[in-house]
Image 1: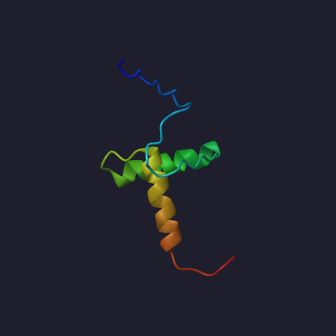
Image 2: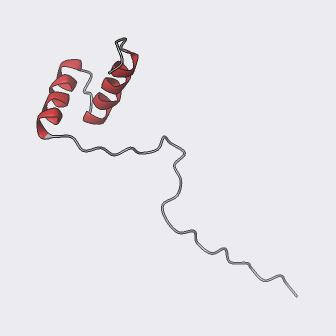
Length: 67
């Protein structure tokens, strides 16, 4: 007699992508406009998400006194 085929139950939810975790944030409209303006000046067809990542990196690298 042949072995019966085992059925694997489906996993729930979206599969893991292995990428960096998502961090959501809300910004006031005037700050969004400033980010979009900065992205336009940066060129290279920078998206808003990429602009925010770059601005955060610049802010973290900036030297200054503690608040």
